[in-house]
Image 1 (cartoon, rainbow over the protein chains, first blue to last red):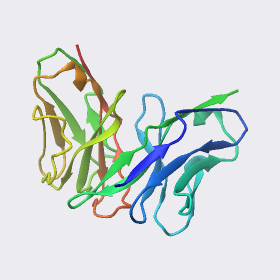
Image 2: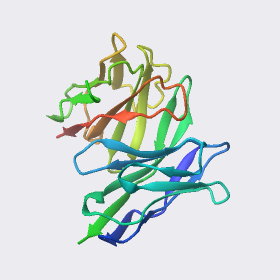
Image 3: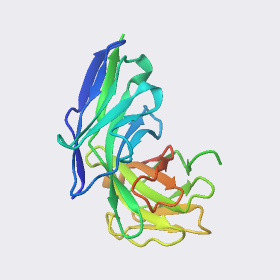
Length: 115
Length: 116
């Protein structure tokens, strides 16, 4: 069965320092993976997605994620955190249904950015 | 419209009342999805539509929940005889076709439902 595990419920960094949000997946075949971000009282926004075209995926706002099959990981990184990055981040895998796909969400990681 | 819209943004109701939540997907998107976000359960899938059809309703929590989509566009999620455990944010998403695992689902801002 497809699933994702986000290893940290909270991550706190100082502004200007690197961000690492960890995600491991479980899949019997090559998965489609996504990272979504949810700012307070806002909707979910797609940051990036892995489509098997390239293992290093670049997303919006300077975020990127690397698909590592040997480690079954899809960690999200950013070289330098900004205050506006404070939000909740969800690692997501796509699961096939009858004629479409539904998203299976991880439990989320709340990113705090200290000034 | 430019994005997925949902109404109302907030709904407070009394236990036992029925509520209707509306979703307006991105124009031209044939696939539409409903999710629920609650403190205890995280983000969970409820139901999806391909056009006006909902092939799989197994994600709905109980038979008090129903959904329909008309004209391949607007969808309504109805909760009958609401219970306090129905309190959550109900999110709607749409995608262009929904037939590929890499299709992006675009989310609306959600409806926050509070059952007193």
